[in-house]
Length: 588
Image (cartoon, rainbow, N blue to C red; front, side, top):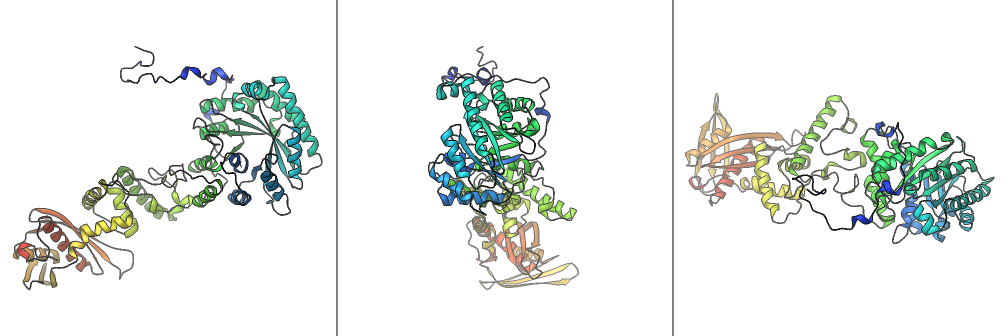
């Protein structure tokens, strides 16, 4: 048997793609594994320092970079959400970025608790222009970067390890000199493509900069270790971060930061495992914008913590508003299935999911009442919803939506949440079939309003035209009621029974129509004593079973009309027109 098909149940065949051209990660970079490797046993218990780079890294990834108004709007959003360290631009890259940094240097433009980060390559003229842009800033982080991986070193920069280290040290020395006497200036270094750089070389360069910049606990240096191009599973990145975490000099004077990209689609996992491995700071973008497949998504990362009972330290309570601002600034849509923020991520169309969610929400409300707290404060355990949509500003109206894939649970939930109807289980099953027939042809979603129209037409409307001109029911003695009525044709109905509805069915039977009530239910709509009630009746009419529903301020009136609705629906199914004499279908 071929090595690619070791099991008889696996019938896959070679694809013909030239996969042999690519080297696996373990052949491209050494990953030193500690004997006491500890990150897999750790848990995330607090939020790292989040640093949004939307205004630099995300901005340079846009087909149309942000104009000044959009940059100001994005910066205002980031500060409003609670970010305290924000990469604001690459001042030497464009006049727009330079001018934006100058705006922030104006008196009162920068919130007192926010530190801007400015980005520069290791080139003397670019560093000079960066400091020119910073003039007047009350505090700042100067972020120096240079690619250090072998392919970048040799092919792009044309340097060996020694030469590149000298270039980096010269640039870092220039930054230190220009920062002398400036208040509140700290330093950051990114060995770009860290994840493909020899670990000993990355460590050597970082430790040299820690010494050159004289890092101390009250003036720490940031070493930011980017997975610039993802090349391996997230555990490999975590091992690389743990190696640096354990071997960096002056560890209490170094803030270990990560900057994952998403080339393999595992940027979020890389960031989470990196924090387990010792990272204290995470750079990324809102909704993951960035070059190629994007930077790590700070929204997903932060709300992942929220689902674990850990405060993300950033306010996402108006997530739709945040998304609108980001979409405006980036001119890029957030996909419908984007974690937490997409239009459909809290929505269930599947019948089994809807049933579970509907029951879960009812259980949650009951549990909150038992605890004596509002639902938004009660512990959250609802199937298929990892967070309460209300936490991020969503209401429950979009949680369950109906299409041809939906079932009775979701349909019943919508009618209950929007119109207050508590459908009996067999009516749920009956109406689900009605909805299925209505949606199967197009496959399109049906709104709650359209659902109500369909329900009304199927179960309420048959009793509304009324074949009865008038009717009364009254007790005739202990355990006995009399029903009398007049058909619009002029013929009289009369019957007795042990209750109003049995008297009605007796009157119909006396006129030649056999009606048996199989199920009856009623409830008030809302808490207003003078409000409407709804009655549900399942009846067998001349051998055909149908449901009828009616609403009225009188429960008795609603129940009578619900019976008549079921009768009319059954007779209409037999091709008999409602409203004819009772022997042929007299009913309301």
